[in-house]
Structures are given as structure tokens and as C-alpha cells.
Length: 166
Image (cartoon, rainbow, N blue to C red; front, side):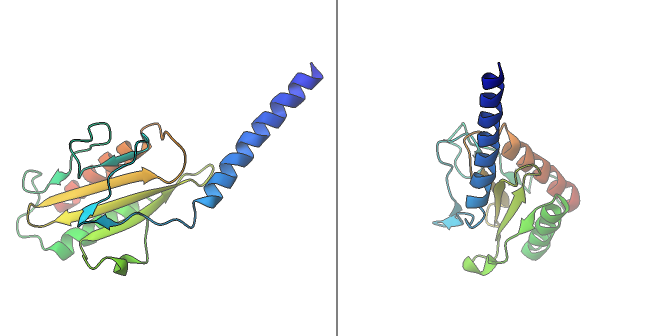
């Protein structure tokens, strides 16, 4: 019985240490950025959502159509991007300092950190003024499943952005 209890403690400790190591190893990574003027497609893990690729039904999430969302008319791109920045920081996101990597100023990248192990999720947005769409990509840097956290986060950010732009 004592051996079994010791084995359980060792396994649980190894799993917890593994999570901390995995979290630490992802801290130096960067969001993927734009690929041919679009947000990057999700890889085949369920810990990612993206609004750029409707054919990828398991990862697809609707972009915000600002024309249909009741957003005030005649908003400038600067006002829209400023609102997105405010919503992301109010939700606990940290905007990436290296926004200059993308010449398209209508792209933003931010990170969100989980409270327990400090896992990092990348949230990227791209405003398409031609179609008046706001696209999102949210993905976990580590692990396989996120239990729907990224999808839920994008839905909450979308709702908050639309409310502020109305």
C-alpha cells in the first residue's frame, strides 16, 4: 500500500513538473503572424480557432461582419484597432510589442496566460477594411486540447468589441 501511494505521488509530481517545464519552454515563442495577408491556418490540434478558413470546419469561427453587427458608421481603422486593443487589455491580454514586424497596421497580436501553469495562448486579429470584417485566430502554444478555451475567449472578445463599437 505504501509503495502504491509513493508511486501515485511520484506520477502526479512528474505530471505537474512536466506542465511547468512545457509552459516555460513556450515563453520565447511568438504568434505566427500573417501568411499571404491572412492569419495563419490552424494545425490539426483542437486547441485553435480561426475565422479565415471556413473550409476548416473544426477550427472555424465566424469573423465579425462590422456592417451587420450594428457598428457605428464611418469609424476609422484607427478607432477600430484602438477599440480592439482596449478590449484585449481589459480582458487580461498583453499586446505584443513587436507590432512593427507586420507592415499592415491592421494586424494585432496578444498573449493570454493561464493562471495555474502560465500556459500561453496567442490571440491575433486582422481587420479587413475592404470587406469590413474582423478576423480572429486564437491558439494554445502548448498541449493538445484546450477544452474550448480559445473559442470561448474569441466569442467574449467579439461580443465586447461589438458592444464598444456600437
